[in-house]
Image (spheres, rainbow, N blue to C red):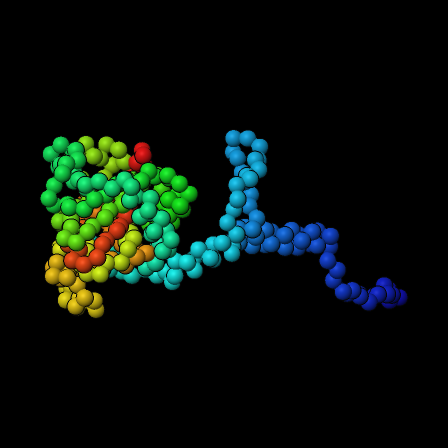
Amino acid sequence: MATMARGTRHPRFLPGRRSSPFTLILAALLTVSVVLLVLLALGIFSLDVDSDGPTKTDHRPRRSVHEARSEMEQRGNQWTEVISWEPRAFLYHNFLSKKECEYLIELAKPHMAKSTVVDSATGQSKDSRVRTSSGMFLRRGQDKIIRTIEKRIADYTFIPVEHGEGFQVLHYEVGQKYEPHYDYFLDEYNTKNGGQRIATLLMYLSDVEEGGETVFPSAKVNSSFLPWYNELSDCGKKGLSVKPKMGDALLFWSMKPDATLDPYSLHGGCPVTEGNKWSATKWMRVHEYKA
C-alpha cells in the first residue's frame, strides 16, 4: 500500500508582540486618571458637581499648596498628646497660630461681660461666685477666620461643624477662677437644641505666668508622677491638670463611647495667680445645633 505523503509543515514564526490600539488607549486613560488624582490631592485642580443641575463654575479663591504649608508653619509643629483615658482627654499642641489667638482676643475684647452659669433647676443663665471670669459669645461661622478654625475642629474631632455651638471667649484676671463643674446638662431645657453636649474643645489664647490650669479632680491619674507637676499651682496639684499655653487646645469628652455621661469629666479653671488668661471654648452636641 502506498504510503500517504504527509502535508508539508511550515515553520511557525512568532513575531514581536505589538500593542493593539485598545491597549494604547487604555494606558493613556490610566495615565490621565493618575495625573488628575494627583492634581486633585494637591488642590491645584477641582471638580464642581451640582446634583440639582448642570456643573457650575466656582469663582471663589482656593488656597494653594504654598498657602496651606505657610499656615502650618505659622502654627508650628503640631502633635497630639494623650492626657487621660478616664476622662478621655487629648492635648493638641499648636492647634492655633499666634495670629489666630490674637485675632479672637481682639474680636472679643469690646464685648466682654460678667460670665454666668446654667441653673440646673430652670436651665437659665445666672450669676454665680463659682465662675468669676468675664466672657462673650461669637456666632458660629461669623467670619472667614472663625470658619477656618471651626473646620479644623471638625477635622480633628470628627464632629460636624453643624453640631458645634458658637465660640465662648473667656478672660481671667488675677484671682479669677471657675470651680469644678460638668459641661453636660442635667435639665431638659438645654438639650432641646442639639441634644446633650458630647465634647468640649478648650483653646488657650494666651500664656499664663502662674496658675490658671485646667484641672480634672476626679481623673483616674496620679498627677504627682506628671513631669510638669512641680510647675503647677496648689489648685493644679489637686488633680490631673493642663497648663495654659498659647495655641494649644484641650479636647475632652463629656460622654463615654457608650453614650452615657462621664462623671470623670468634672473639670475646673484654677485661679490665675499671676498674669492674664484668655481662652476660647467650643462645645459640641450629639445632634445638629441650630445656631
